[in-house]
Image (cartoon, rainbow, N blue to C red; front, side, top):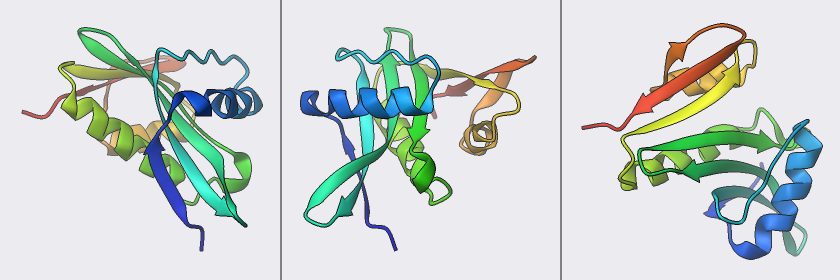
Length: 134
């Protein structure tokens, strides 16, 4: 069984996040100004970042830019744990909603919908929104 740790990323994690993002996504832009949470697994005597969630904080909303999990570690609940950490962060912010765009055929769309997001715009790309709980 994998020992998975989720934590807020620090400045020293940006390079590892950027490498993983480039491996997973066609077009990824990583900024040190944004908020990241990482998923780590313990390997021998070191931790390895195997997933991340990327948040862009704006005054009126938080954009969930993406969740990425290394292909070798998918279907182990890491994406769900990252999303839970991101939503906990969002609930502490003053932003009224969390917004993301996801391709309609992306299996992650079901994960977002099961976590309180709803489709605001349909088509090839879904715009999903999650209002802050009252």
